[in-house]
Each structure stands twice: as structure tokens, then as C-alpha cells.
Length: 93
Image 1 (cartoon, rainbow, N blue to C red):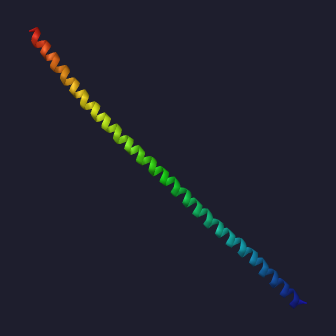
Image 2: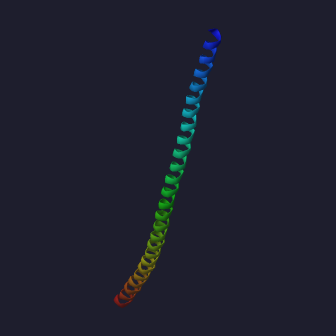
Image 3: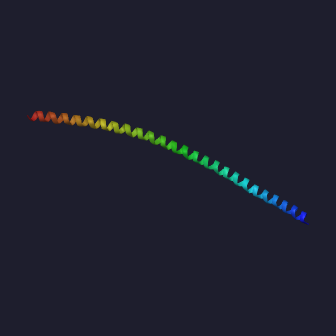
């Protein structure tokens, strides 16, 4: 009888271990899948952000060019204004 109990107990433990092993394997596979999915998602977001950053840099360069052009034009207008004021002052004297 004791031998029968040990055999049953041993068989039950094997099944129990087998179920535990299956659960552990499933959890590892699930974790690996989630990791891969997260990595794919993060890479996709990274590509989108890199594209947006590139567009913003292009826009920034364009705006910098416009600002430079406006500053140059402002300098020319100030010089013209100063020249006109100088001529007016000479004519008054």
C-alpha cells in the first residue's frame, strides 16, 4: 500500500511540476513577446520623433534665414534714415 501511495504521489508531483513548468514557459514567452512588442513600438515612436525633429530643424533654419534677412533690411533702413536726417540737418544750416 505504501508503495502505491508513493507511486501516486510521485506521479502527481510530476504532473504538478509539468503544469508549473508550462506556466513558467508561458510566462517567459509572454514576457519575450511583450518585450519585442514594446521594442517595436518604441522604435516606431523614435522614427516618428526623428522625422518631426528633422522637420522642425528645417523650419528653424528657414526662420533663422528670414530673421537674418529682416535684420539686414532693418540695418539698411536705419542707414538710409540716418543719411536722410543728416542731409536734412545740413540743408537747415
